[in-house]
Length: 126
View 1 (cartoon, rainbow, N blue to C red):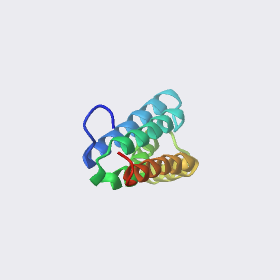
View 2: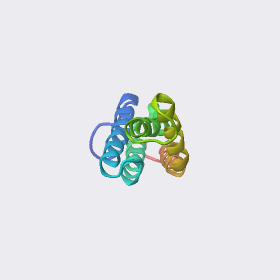
View 3: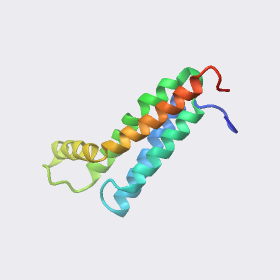
View 4: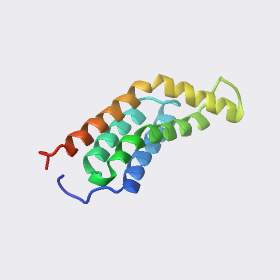
């Protein structure tokens, strides 16, 4: 790990949640739905969190990404126009639809974080 202090569990939550909320806001303002910003920032945050997390808090880098991505998609779902209903029901249906469309990004980010954390936990890694 080069530069900076390692992330605590709360730090991982802030990094992942912040990246997904910022990406969600950028996508919402530019295209009105989940697009490239939330995906790109999510993947970058997953890698950063997995590299910088403390060894004791490794689980937060693996469990946090899907939760943070769902948070970002919830933001998009509540503020984007949705045709699957109105109110909270429509927003929930839109969020689930977006999650189904963006499932590949969630699996990729979580898989990258898991691979990085596992490599860092090997006995010969510094």
